[in-house]
Length: 228
Image 1 (cartoon, one colour):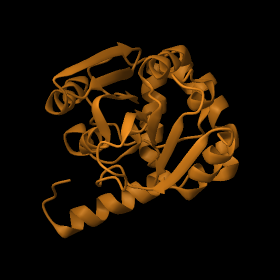
Image 2 (image 1 turned 90 degrees about the horizontal axis):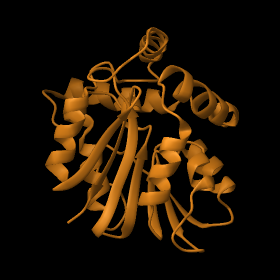
Image 3 (image 1 turned 90 degrees about the vertical axis):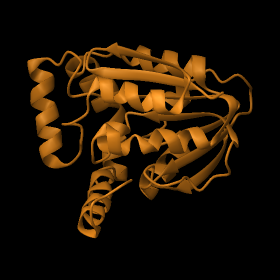
Image 4 (image 1 turned 60 degrees about the vertical axis):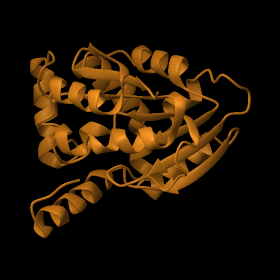
């Protein structure tokens, strides 16, 4: 990420660390209920079925999950093979451990990684990569944190897919309740999407893929890009 000075870099680094801090084991126990039964359908007006459909149509045999949450969607995904290989990449060891335990029936590899930096996985080593509900948690505008999309694309083989979802602040319909929750989460440092605009997301996809799809469901942008 480009910065004007060292203070800016340090501030962003600390904000990244602060943003992942709330996701400790106790909080993760309630994450699925709060996000997939609560905020996504009720505040962002996006049914969890939209996320699962994207996984079922985009995921590959060797998959990279960037910002792993709890693994909720991966446990419900129809993989194209019976024994997929899944790399879990996250800055937070608690979420990595929680998700790896939940996916114990699959072959998983845990990697501590910051999506704003080049990922510590070999280039073009995966069939797919996901950034689900991640970008709105990363500090900066999409013009800055869109670098996470580029890093994901670098890890995917030619012909593979990068896909994901993010809650947007402008360019999409936001209900009064959704705006209230969005402002509250930004004030607490859980969200960092007060500058996140639909057209900025589209521009980031254009910069990284010749072939991509971007659709809006409620306040959520869902995207997928196919690597040439």
